Image (tube, rainbow, N blue to C red):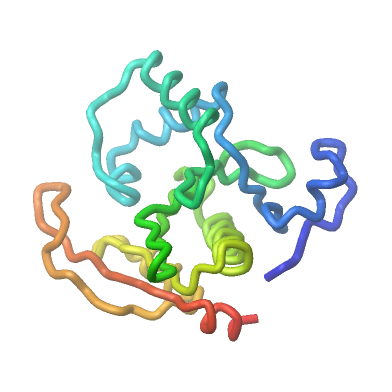
Length: 197
């Protein structure tokens, strides 16, 4: 935690080497308009779509281009959607977003998705930690939460390994792949986050 990239790189200006948004494996950044194909390719796998959200109807090339343009121009307040890019190649390997921001309670939710060919390389865990560092350390939130589908053992294991507390299980709260699934709620407070360091 807190480690920044310690290499000389011609890909990034020197100021980004000490950026909060850059870790050992990933750099979180805005989605660029020309990257629409990476996200379209992700949507071609229904299991991947289900793991992060739900299966959506097919979208045209123009639809993906419009979506990527909208993401590139989106005002990045406390509810944001960022590309998770490999720190060496700058190639998108997934995305992470925040939602359901409650400034009064100091709570936010997030979701993360990694492209199938890039899974199990530590990208998701580092992206989650970077977002936590920002939301806790820069935006004064006191708790983050995530909902994980009960039939997604990889994501359940990821959240447990990161030190999240399972706060509850909403039985048969989501529907996909022809059946109702449980939604497992994970949470971590700012104090729990600091104690991990």
